Image 1 (cartoon, helix red, strand yellow):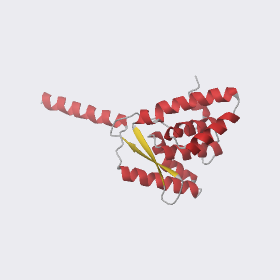
Image 2 (cartoon, one colour):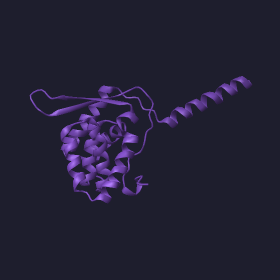
Image 3 (spheres, helix red, strand yellow):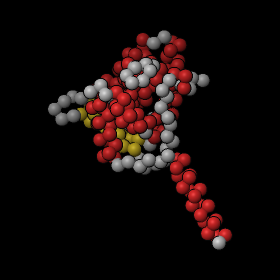
Image 4 (cartoon, one colour):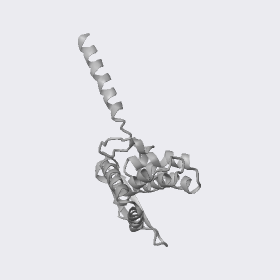
Length: 177
């Protein structure tokens, strides 16, 4: 009887530990569908739905999702407008190496005051620590779309457990220390 109770207690604690990791397993095709759907919704100006579809993937390190989230914050689409949060997402999205994204980030950064640049640097460093390719075990490859010069980025998340961080909705939540 004592052994059965002990076994039951161990099983319950294991189940609770698994839930606390918030481990989410999704098929890579489902992830790419979700990302395409989120981008399509963004272009249709369905910002709340786009944010829901892309926000989760952005936190997992998916670069296209991070890029579109950056614009939502920079422009205040469904979220409170925030240059710092938008630049944080754009900065981490530039890990993809897509020249257009890097040039856009650099142009916005150059327009910021030195004090704002210091804050942007802190946010980007924090976002790379939490949502970057290395932190989220993501690998990306760039390819050009057939019949176009547009560069597409395809990311894949390795089957490793990574920490799930929440999205900062307001600048007061940022780690600027």
